Amino acid sequence: MDNSVLVIVALIIVVLGLAFVFSQRQQSEKLQRKFGPEYDHAVNKTGDQHQAEAELAAREKRVASLHIQPLTMEQREDFTQRWKEVQAKFVDKPAESIVDANLLVTEVMQARGYPVSDFEQQAADISVDHPEVVSNYRAANEITAKNKKLEADTEELRQAMVHYRALFKELLEPEQVKVKEMHKELSR
Image 1 (tube, rainbow, N blue to C red):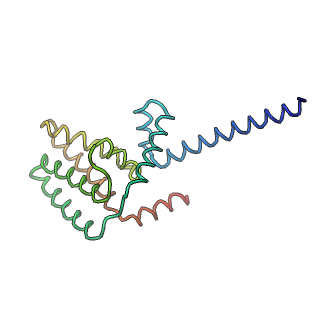
Image 2: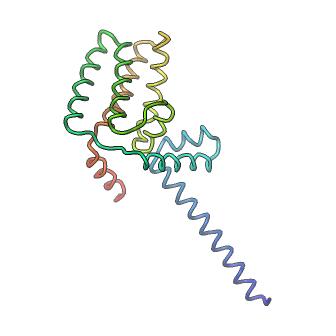
Image 3: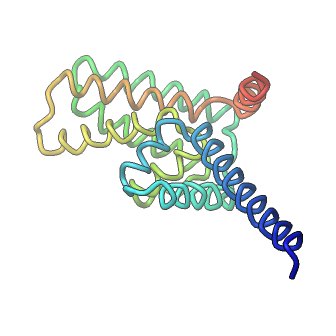
C-alpha cells in the first residue's frame, strides 16, 4: 500500500470516530433537555452517564408503547372538584388529606393510561412526559411513607400537598397545550 491509501484510511477512521462522538454528544444533550433534573437524578442513581442515558432511552421507549391519553373535559372537571375537596380537608385533617391526594394522583395517572402497580415504575414513566415534577412526586411519596409511620410534621405534610398539586396540575393539563408549549420551547 502506498502512503496516500494509508492516509485516506486513517482520515476515514478519524471522521467516523468524530461522527460517533458527535452523535453521542447530541444524544446526551437531547436527553438532558428532555429530562432536565431527572437526567441528573438518573446519572447520580446509576453512577454512570451511559447507563443512565440507556435507562432514560428505555423509559421513553416503554412509555411510547403505553396508551397514554388525555383526560376528557368531564374527567378533568371531576378530578378538579375532587382535588378541591382534598385541599379543603387539609386544614382539619392534613395527614388524611395527604393519603387522599396520593390516591387521587394515582387515579388520575391510571385514567391517563399510566400503569400504577409500582411506585418506582410510576415515577420512571411519569418522568418521560413530566420530568419537571417527578422529583416533587418522589418527595411527596417519601413524606407520605413517613406520614404512614406517624413521623411527618405539619410542614412536611404541607410540602407533600404542594408536590402532589404540581403533579396533579401537570396530569390534568390538556395535551394540546403541552404540545404548543413544546413547540415554543423548540423554536427558541
